[in-house]
Structure formats: C-alpha cells, structure tokens
Image (cartoon, rainbow, N blue to C red; front, side, top):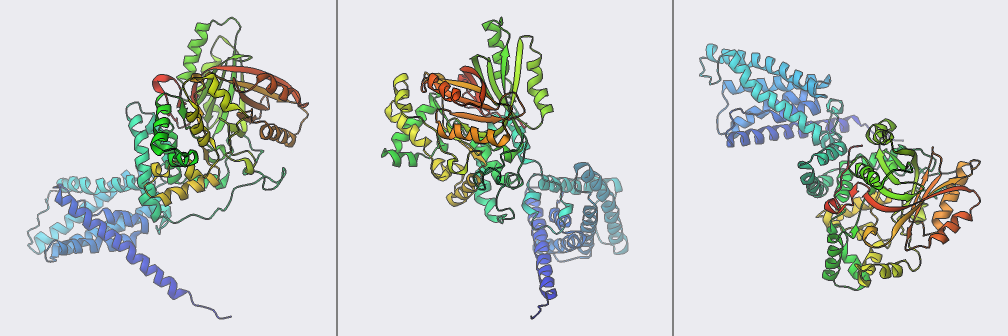
Length: 611
C-alpha cells in the first residue's frame, strides 16, 4: 500500500491558519484604531486585535500581529515609516508576546487574574515605551510627542491597554469563547463562556429591566439564528439519545428508570448551545403572544381566511382564554420537577386559606400552582436543581405554617401527559399527540358562552399533531425560514420541549379534577411503568399524567370535571387491581402554568427563575 507523506500538508495548513490569524488581528487593529480616531477618543485603543489573537493563538501570533499592524496603520494613514514607528511596532510585538505568554499560563481565564495580568502588562509596557521615547529623543533627536513623565505615561497606557484587556475578556466571556472556540489554537487560554441560560433568566428577574429583556430575547434569537448560526459548523458528534432496553428496545426516547435531576449526555450537549436556549427562551416568553401560532396552517385546515383566523385567535388571547405555554424536557435541563400536594388543618378559615393561596401565588419559584378542595387544599410544583434549594425557596415557608397538616412531595420520574398533550416519556409513537375524549368539544360548546363553534374548531385544529414548523410560526422566530425550521426539527426530534394549547378553564365553566394514585407496594418498577402507560394510552380522559417516585404515591392523574364523567373515571381506577389508594381533589383556582401567570392583571407573564 502506498504511503502518503502528511507533513507537507500539515505545514501548509499551519501556515494558512497562521496567515488567517494574523490577518484577522491586523484588520481588527486597523479598523478599531481608525474608528477610535474618527470619534475623537483620547486613547488610541490600537491593539485590540493583538490582545485577542495573542490569547487565541499564543505569543508568536501576538508578536506578528502587534508588529505588522502598527506599520500597516502608519502606511494606511498616509505617513512614511519613521524610526519611532518601528519603535512602536516593536512595542506592539512585545505587547503580543506578553499577552500570549500570560495567556498560555491561564492568566485570562478569570476576571481577577485578567486585572492582575493587565496591571503587569501596563507596567512593563510603560517602561518599554519610556525607553523607546528616551532613545528616539536623545539618541536621534527625534521630536517625540508622547509625554516624558513616567507617571503620565503609565496613566496613558493604563487607560489604553487596561481598557482593551478588559473589553477583550468581557467579549470572550459573553460570546467570544462560544464563537471562536473552534478556530482557537490555544483553547485552554480562553475564559469559560458565561452561562447564557443563567444570565438570561437573571436578567428576566429584574423588575424594571425584566419585561424589556423578555421582549429583547426574540430579537436576539432572530439575529443569532439568521446571522451567527450559518457561520457555525453542525455538531454531529452525538447521534442519538439513550433508549431503554428492558421494556422493549426503541419504544421510548429516554431511559424510564431515572430519578429527578437526571441528565442525558446527548441532550445536555444540544441544550448547551446558545441557539437552543435562545429559541426555547423566546418561545417560553411568547406564550401569551398570538404571533407564535402558525395561523396559515389553521386557515388551510379549516378553509377559513387568514384574517378571520387571526382576528379570532387575537380575541381569545386578549380575553385571556388561550395560551401556548412551554415546557422543557427534564432530561435536558437537568432540574428536578417536584410537584406536591398540601393539606391544611380542618378548622382553617376560608380567609386564611386565601392568604396562604396568595403567598403561594407570589412565590416565583413555584412554577405551577392550583388551589383545590377535597383530600388536599393545594397542588403545585417547582422546577429546581437540588433538594436543598427546594427546601430553602419553597418548602421552608410552607412547613413554617401553623395551619399545615400534611405536605406530600411528588418528585416526577416520568412526564407522560399535561394539558392533553403527550410528553417526552410516552412511547415514541404517541409523542406530541393530543388526548381528546369523544364529544369533549360538543360539551364545551354547551357549557360556556365565550367561545363559539368556529373558535372551538380553531382550537381543535391547533391541537392536532402536525409538523413542528406547521404548529409554530417559524417567521416569528427567524427571518430565514430554513434556519428556523432546521433548528425546530432538531429540538422536536430530540424531544427537548412541548407547547400544548392551554384553555383557561376558569372562564369556561369546567374544572381540573386530580387523583393521587398509589400502587401495590409489591409491584416492581417495570410493572409500574407498564401500568402507567396502559392507563394513559387507553384513556384520553386523563389530561394530566405524571409518574412519581420516592413518595407515598406512584401516579398523579387529572381529568376535567364538566367535560368528563367523574364517576366513569373513578370506575376506570377502581377496575385496576394493583391500585390500593386514590386521593382526590378538584381545582378552584389556578395561579400559574409552567412559569406563566394566570391571574387577570398579570395574565400570560412568564417569570423564570434561574432555579
């Protein structure tokens, strides 16, 4: 077999990348220096490219950029190259050498190290600059214009180089590392990128800035998907997510045995991408925006005019009857989903219960909450990273209530169905299908007066399973349809989120009715999974189905009183021999649905805490 010598090819690639790096740095220096002069800055900021390329490529690339960019800037400015220009070029080369050397030893990874490194660079660079000025003025009698006073020189250099060092570090921290990591020679030199998911949610929590930021997220998403993503290479290193073998290979998307805060490698790789967080964040914040809905698909399905569909959907949104909330897969984000049911003591007055209800409503860590009556007084939940944080931010205030009789945690093991829509832990064949019982919409038409037959047909059309790009309005997310569709299809294929249709039952004359179900203690885990699947697959009456673990119950189910026959639903549960206990409660009020507020004055506002 003929052997090929790869060394010349590798050398060619090295020199090509070296030229590429140096050109980027020189162009950055010249352009930014020109802009600084154009707007009248008192400091030159002429070595942004030098510092950036020295961090990305090391000392050698920093030397080349620092030296040649000074000479090129002089030529482009229309001046001849004088002795002092060569001295300045040497200063630039020394700056690149210093930054590259310090970067190789990790001095630009953390902010405090960057500040210390910057101070060191300022001192050394100032000494070298003074020596250069002294040589030019005394040895060559050249009329240098830079101040001779050493302290003045240090201050001048500090304003210039220290500012540039910090600006470059902030750039890398925010987006530079994410954008340039694939081309950097010295990846170890780069500061770890900021947690963009945490940054986004923290900004959304700020009282004044939050509402502005939530709207700005969409604009950032459009810009990122349309102009940044096309420059990035697709990451195909992980082809698929884990699938369960014990219960039938290929039947499920995710491992069914996980506990809370379980995180799958393939999903976290996808979720960590900025474009994914931006897209899902935009969809989450837009739950109360009718423009998120693909109205063209509905109009075509019902043979209605697009204007008619738009007018009716807008009215349903404005009347607080309709939402499109978003839920992200537990396996993706890595948080635990802790639902819970709360029972108050018997003699608690209605007024005191309302006060406790308000306390629960106003806790932004509680993402979903219902006021109920029956065996329990509240049903609610929190997406949160650890049990410690759950206790500190949610449970502690509840346990401190003297009126508390019982609090039962329901840590979610499998998300099967919510708001009629099948979630990611259903078998693959049932993914994102909507469960509707026979005659449900006919009953709904009779029991309320705010939605007419055409409105209900539009809602039914929205609930039909369809391609994700036909379900959501891609144009709302990206001006380049192909880019937006591609990302949506990836997220849908990997089961990263759902956006079911939410109808405001509080205005439609029916009520959620919940069942906390306990199986026989002798049942093994496989049988519990199979039994839960059988109940949910065969009975669309259950519009919510959560399999829970590490608690006194095994399954949490819900139906709609007023649309389903509660007696028949109870009969379904009574027919299952393995069910040994059922607790019941009916909702009287809902405060939130997956971080989206339900009360009239804040209807549709999405509040996501970092937890």
